[in-house]
Length: 131
Length: 418
Image: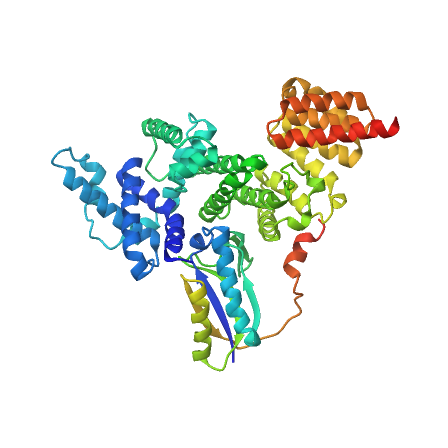
């Protein structure tokens, strides 16, 4: 079964980490990801919600600055992971949590999944495209 | 990471909201800061066991408020109680509704806390020091290190600045829309000052001052979280991110400044650039341009050029022309002239900056740019003279070293030709 693991944490707290603290968390998470690499699909870390834009459907649709929901904890990233059952995916979450305390993981089984065509360097390609 | 480091990060991120709310309760900065301090001490005792609470700010507000009120009760035998109207709204200290109480106010609380640091009577350096102390929670020792002054001197400077704002009338009611937008503008400028204080440092101080840049980016994101639809705050945040993205490439190992054209673009921080570009995208959609957005757009054009020769100088020149209209200043014109020299050659650029001699005669960059244009026009004697004037006016060793490099090149040319 495919699961989405949605990572929530207070972005105020996360973006108050020093560069060293941030690097340490990312390195620790990297080790967990390494252990689970045979089961992991796409993994993403999101920019802060200040970079978010929300389109509220309607006629006409409304474009709003900021995230969809104003909450104490924000969606900061996600994993797609292929696990046998809920127990296994919760084990994955516990390991992630040990590397990155604070916040919560929401586990959501997938109904539909398409692998898509995203190039691995899509993020940096966006930066270097000439204006 | 140790528990303590986590708690530190949680407290740092909760600080503006908590001190802002406590300031609204007590209407006195010292009381608010002491209350927050006490709450932090209790947090350090209880959080390591139980873990930080889910809503650290509300916890610190409640505990700080109660502690300060207890303190007031204990000293009430010696000292007079504060006027009733000041404590009447905090009578019921047992209420567990801190979150509801604060939720509605927290935007204005944080804005007020930042705004009191922007008092127009305070010189820029005091505004910065005060913001770092009050909003960011840096210790006096840390701030003193940043400004390269003694701890006692900095303590005195902050105390004096606080005394000055204590006398100023700060409105504690929720501000109206006009006042709110004025506050946002003042706070944005203060955040920008914090950044430039860190960013304009020379190589010797760049390491000690880097935290200022990071703190300014954090504050800018915080203001943007409060005012999500403000294009100028998007622009400010983008500007800081895009400038700071070049931090690792700005100095060579000997500490000399590296010009934009000569920087190793592989050392630019791609994550910061990506976020900056995303924010400019968002800001442009509002079609309400302002100086921060234009400056960010200029920085974005540099960030997007994979090589110096890919830089869209014509577009940059247009943006500087727009900035000249919004914030006329000889320095902006000078920057525009640099873009002109790249887009259309040094002759036109030189003609553009010659009339600026009166206002910029004491300005390092004017002489440096003039020397560079003259050199490109092969007017070597005049170029040398301009470079010599520039060296005399250099603010940092790195600036001087950079100009000396130009003169050496000039010298080498002459020698080779001779």
